Amino acid sequence: MKRIYMLLAIGCGLLFAASTCFAQMYTLTDLSANGQESYPRAGINARGQEAGIFWYMKNDIPTYHAFRTAPNSPISHPTDDLGSFGGTLSYAIGMNASGQVIGIAQMSDDTFHAFRTAPDSPIDPATDDLGAVGVTAINDAGQVVGCCLPNSHAFRISPNSPINPATDDLGTLGGTYSNATGINNSGQVVGVSTTAGDGEYHLFRTKPNRPINPATDDLGPVYDPYSSAVINAFGQVAGCCLSNNHAFFLPPNGRINSATKDLGPDFQPMAIDSYGEVVGFSDKALLFSGGTLHDLSGLISSQDWVLAFTTGINDSGQISLSAKAPESAYRAAVLNPIYQGLVRPPIKADGSSIFSAKRQSVSVAFLLNKYGTRTCTLPAATIAIVRVTDGRLTTARNAKLSITGCRYAYDLKANRLGVGVYRADISIEGIMVGHAVFALQ
Image (tube, rainbow, N blue to C red; front, side, top):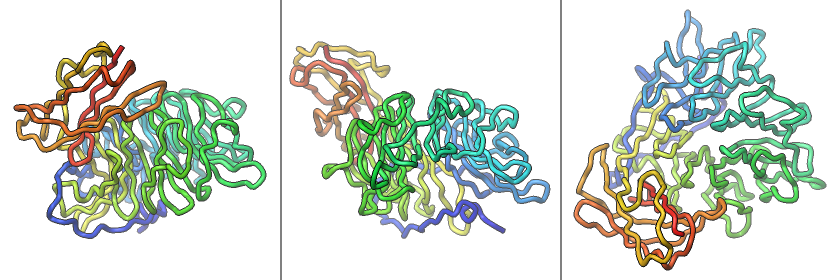
């Protein structure tokens, strides 16, 4: 019987046993009932829902269907099966914050069409058929991107609308082919396109809701047409691959050059959150956080699990991935952060705090939750102050946090920073655990 990973033609490498000396940063929760085989390809959204593909027997027929869980819940076959277009196969590829899922589903004549569901709903053949195209990502507005229109071009579909080649064609960087692989909530799209003349494959990043502009959107050469990239709200991009088969990380408005952040060989980034944290895999499940690449197998408390494909991360720090216990199939799982930094006054948690830029100092303080409960046992932590200007991010300060009683504290010299919007990111063991946003004026 074919298994999910044979069906998807995805290879995976097993991890060697991790060292017994490691920092526990995540707990692992198995989402598959009775160890049922499943794969969370569509990642995890802001509500803690996972989506992907699972295998089960239906009327004695092996069935591979797309699934979407309830928020922070295990897979339930009766409620989470998204169905298909009449065939026995469907596959979830992306999901947004409202629970809309995109993917590929089999028709009754054994052909395949793309689908986009309504929020928290199964596939409806009457409304969800997007046609014989490949879809790759969806944003919270319901815009979908992918490839290919009949002219081998990438597309971006208007919110919750069918494909219209006249308006949705993104064009190319001058060549004949393009493929969109990621979209953010402002409608910026990233992907790969051939260029004019030599037909090289280059990465592109569009302006919000605009087609590809060869004069402004060319980010530089990538390895081959199978290169891909993901994008977050600020336009930060993670992708694969450079000419040395290495993954990369680009700042907003940045291009591939000698200063590009190299994420290492054979790394496939799969998702990026609003804080620039990237998850993906090579021969192991990986997290890029705080400027460093982390092997997730060394950061979980359940060391008997093998972690494989890391597929998503949300802004709460939850990570979706495929994992297996000894003598079991790979299945969908979620990593939940052990630590959560909670900002304290005078900075408000809702990001509405405004202080005078002439003020000598602003107190930045965090309490810490561990396993959801307040703790006074505070491990060493660092803080990074990032300036946000016209969608651009600039690191203004990096420092160690002092520990005062049951809270972390940092005395920020406001009069040395100047007017602007700032974000304070607290990290433990190099992994972000909390954030605060404020303005100086």
